[in-house]
Length: 364
Image (tube, rainbow, N blue to C red; front, side, top):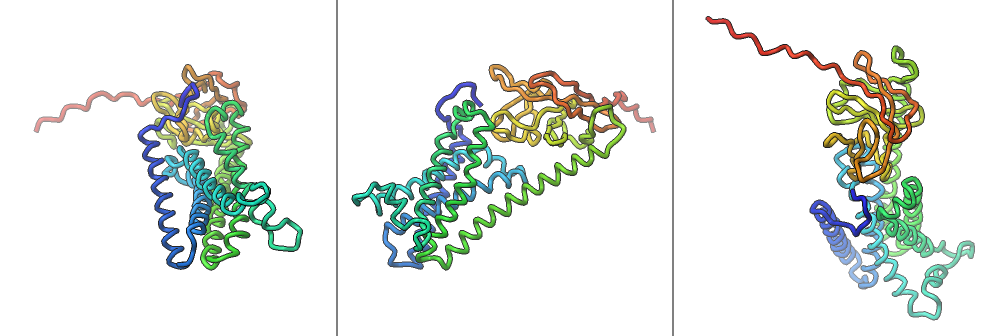
């Protein structure tokens, strides 16, 4: 995390990640080319290049959309989530090679503007002919370009996290039009006997995993809200959040307060509660850890004080905080948030009295 905008600095970890992505892309292109030549020995170089780069971009975009739900289901996928923007930019580059070569190969040598030709050469909607697929590819490539161009933290800060995230939700629209592009275009020609099931399986997997992760989060939120509503015996105005013993030292738990999610953390014997949304990209803070006394977001490492919700200087990000109380080992939270950066009332776990050294063993 950096207080100033600068060119991307590739740490050793990011270099390894980018190298792995590049290697996977090369392996995919090699395998795809080999399989295509084995099944279609008369395929031209141009056909191989178009199909290989186009299918690569589609597969990579499918992976991009799978990373989020997988990370919500299991923290083992968080390292991939940390670097998902690199994967997204690589996806755009693969799509750009595919689109640029298609425009040059089929549209650049005529008398019509290449882009206009790509939009109109395979017919128009409603003309009674085949449904055009190239306009869908142009739209998908434009959306991927917009997301790649705004992937830097400069745009994240200046557009504000909520606007930036809303803009990048367009990736689902891009995926939908690219599914249509593949289904209406490439699959109408050779190879449809195996490309249809592969494309359908990829799209179905993305949809199913997104649905499963959403339903799982909904069930957790509902269970948390129902437990809080049914609980009694806490301080006035507070709701039951979590059993303190269920929070390991240095970790947090996500709880639901009405329509909001909060994160309850344990730092030694101190229990505190802050908003669950990181100010960087609204990452789930409750899935992170306390490092050097600071809540550390599991997505990109942004940090906050667990009591005040303030990022350490020179950063000026602030979280909403919540007052907590502890009764009979249960953490209770006031669902009315304090202003961002305001110190909240915390609770402390009881410390067991030191019983002293063990008595000396009796002489035999």
